[in-house]
Length: 300
Image 1 (cartoon, helix red, strand yellow):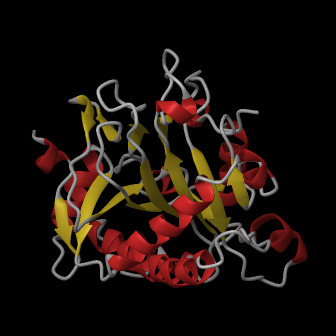
Image 2: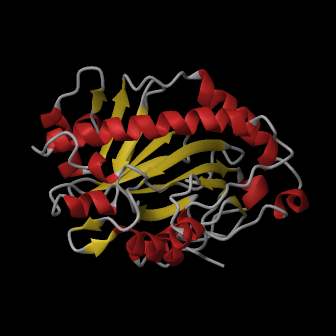
């Protein structure tokens, strides 16, 4: 099975539900075209966010938060391998993290899951760009959940009936070169091996040698195929559980800066879609699970 077969491209203007079903049984990943996102928007977000990440560390420190917070995750803050029990060194990245903030009216739920985001004053253009992008990601994610329901042989609203007021997370991940992070330690990655936690993840990524790899039982680790016109989509743990294990939560990692291109710098835009707080997913509370996994990957 080639990488193309393992992670096929699905055109959302005329999707093949059977192809989606097969892909999600294998590696839990798809490439999607026909998504309707203007390519100039992620370009503008990257250009703006790069201005923040290139600030001196003391300027960024005022926005520092822990995993699950809204702000800057600095070097050493996160070790994604911890969530699967892999004792990797901390991930070689920095992130700007945002999350759902529209209140539900339930004070306890809002305090934990719908707090206001933090917008760095040094890059004022970022907020209007992300307001646009994140609204589009929410619409696209519901569209994907509709397709997944059909691929599973369920009514189209099987999943979206649980996304009336969902939580989501969004990271702008900065993967600098070795001049910033130093040489990778043994077993250290830009992001360690893990599966995502929610329903679907929508990734706009840059291609690089120190880029995304995907795991399958049949082929082990392989470089993920790349198409500049496509978004990369994978399912997370909640979706895999929702399907009683028919589909695999996509295990993946991001390689460290390559030895033959040590100055390589990449920026990824990662949208993690979840569901309404308190949703029962095959006998577990969705957000009790999400909080435990976020706590698990906290490295400091």
